[in-house]
Image (cartoon, rainbow, N blue to C red; front, top):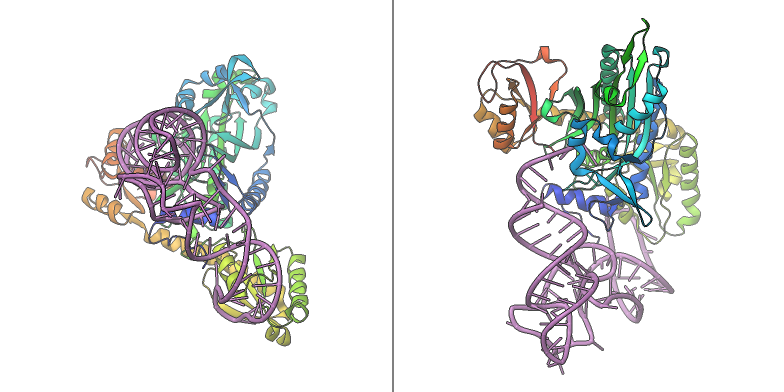
Length: 477
RNA sequence: CGGGGAGUGGCGCAGCCUGGUUUAGCGCGCCUGCCUUGGGAGCAGGAGGUCGUCGGUUCAAAUCCGAUCUCCCCGACCA
């Protein structure tokens, strides 16, 4: 028997942890909260990087790299920022045996060091906008960790931009938010809700934080990406000034934004099922696995056709693996690759060779179909496109089903207790109501949707006063 | 960081309460050979563990005591 994973329905959390290790996405490192992203998991990150980097560059940004260490005094310049991150900063106090004059923070995020450099680089309105992104690792000493969702060290991209005006910075903040939404929906096949964070939930040092939030299949929400309008907070403390078109000295307006390896955890939790992982073809480490049916002297009768199959598909740019290991039976391989979430499996045996065909089985629906070798490439691409779309549609249907309106606080509590999911309700805007709701239901305001106008406002779900806006609540990771 | 649970070959576990017949055991996996292969095959043989780590009690510690590291669950904090 093969090591089974805990069924998703039985214990979601254990299912998630079992699956990640069993499928070799990641493994625990011996230090608290740290993990190794193994090749199968890292391949997803590489796909995410490639597909997102294209978009970042297409919107005019360029990549650079800033230091891992940030002097303590830099972090102290923006107090709100420091207070927000202080509890989770790792400090370097020694270089070799010598104690440092000033402690260095291992970056929890790079606003401070980038702000310092921007003050050196920006002098004139002609230098603006500065649109820089970096792919990097950051460290946050979290108390509770979970592979991919929250680890002490994680990989991400962080964009840092500087602009002439508030309006321009705000436009950038929203442009990126929408870029993230489009990226996550198109490539990860995960539908999201875009919106603004409340002051309580916003980034330490930002004027406003926007986020995309998705629903995992256990009904809890996960923040998938954030985009911050930093206003002039960092510009003032790092003295990032430019002479504007009217020859007057101005502080720049900044933004910052990021997505992390957490997205890999989201893929697992949004699409996975009891048989294991289910990856959308666009980011799957492998898109097609070919399994030769090993009967008789299959190495002579079947294998050459399987190799040819692999070559044809590789030639058109697909990520293909031919599992020609003779020590495993076809049945074993079927289960194994299903667990690893490969979107499409092609079976080829003597029967298929004779008929110039392959048997295709899609992971999302476990459906078998026979494909003629004559129109192999087009057919496979077609199926992969369909899998990508149907995964998104399935997730969207789930999100729609699990997004509810609450008209009374009783209903609100009951939904969060029994069904979870997103709950839309009126909110008066008071932090007190927000805090009390969290205390009583464990739910937080995930976002205030961007298109507030369209939402029914009515009364605050908690205090019954006139609602200032509609908000989306959920229990979250 | 508080409350609870847990660390025993790669994985899942038993043994611990009541220290010594345990040469630390079982299932899966792994290695070798044969035989199989259209949904996780079978047989035979074999390798692999100073019981998380450090210290203490004892003639004797996987077992009792202390510390520490790590993981999991529930809270407080967070991409």
